[in-house]
Image (cartoon, rainbow over all chains, first blue to last red; front, side, top):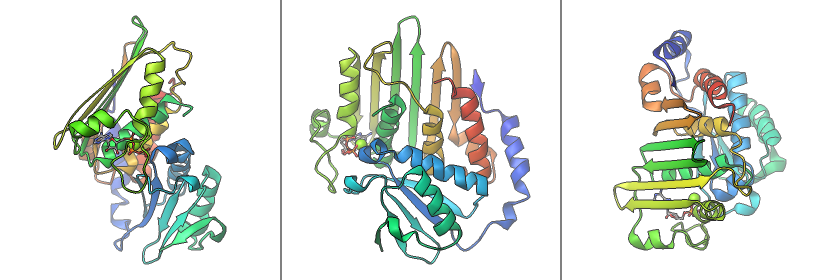
Length: 122
Length: 177
Ligand SMILES: Nc1ncnc2c1ncn2[C@@H]1O[C@H](COP(=O)(O)OP(=O)(O)OP(=O)(O)O)[C@@H](O)[C@H]1O
Ligand SMILES: [Mg+2]
C-alpha cells in the first residue's frame, strides 16, 4: 500500500520552514480557472496544469490558483481570470496551455495585460 | 471527452460546486471481474428527489447561468453504453454518493488518461476541501488524505513546493493509468 509517509511530509516541512517568514503579507494574486463541463471538454485541465507548472518552476509564492464552475460562456472556453493585488479582474478567453504560460509571464509576473486574449475586464 | 479522468474531474466538480467540505474518491480496477469501480462521495448540499430524477436528462441543470447540464448525462451515457451501471444517492443537506461500475475492456470506454494531473489539479485548487482518495489497481493501493498532508505542513497545500512534491508523488504512483 502506497501512502504519503510522515517522512515525506517532514521533508517538505524542513525544506520550507526557512522560507515561511518571507511570504508576502499584502494579499496574493489570483488566478481562477473555469472548470464546468464545457471548460473541461475544451481543455481546462491542461490549461490548469500548465499554470501550476509555471507556478512551480518560477516558485511563484504569491499566486493562488482556484477553480470555478461554468459562467455561461461556453463558446469562449477555456476561460481564466487573473487579478493581481490591487488590479482589475481580467477575463481571458480560449486559454490554451501556451497562452496560459504567456499570461503568467507577461501579466502575472510583469504586470502587462495580454490584450489580444482579453474577453472582458472588471 | 477523450479521457475517463476528465469525466471523473467533471463529476467531482459537481461536488465542489455543491460546497462540499469533504470529498471521497475511489477508483478501483478489479482485474478478475474485469470491472472498474468509480465512487465519489461528498458532504455538499445534496439533491432533492426532483433533481435526482431529472439529473440523467441532458437538459436539466439547477444552475442559472445556462440552461443545459451536461456532466452527469455524459457520464451516464458512457457507462451505460458499456453495459455498466451508475447509482446516485443523495439527500438534501447531507450529501451525494455516486457509484459506478463499468467493464473496463469495453471498446467505447475512453482510456483513463492523465489521472495524476487530474488529482493534482483538484487538490491544489481546492485547499479548503479535504480529499480522501483511494486508487486500487492490481492489488496496489494508493491512499491520499489531504487533511493529513495539511496537518503535517506549515505552509499552504497550494504552495509551489508542495505542488512540486505532490506532482512527483502522483506521477510516481499513478503514472501507469
Ligand atoms: N454532487 C452533487 N451535489 C449536489 N447537486 C448535484 C451534484 N451533482 C449534480 N448535482 C445537480 O445536478 C445538476 C446537473 O449536473 P450536471 O453536472 O449534469 O450539470 P451542471 O453541473 O449543472 O452543468 P455542467 O456540468 O454542464 O457544467 C447540477 O446542476 C446540480 O443541481
Ligand atoms: Mg457539472
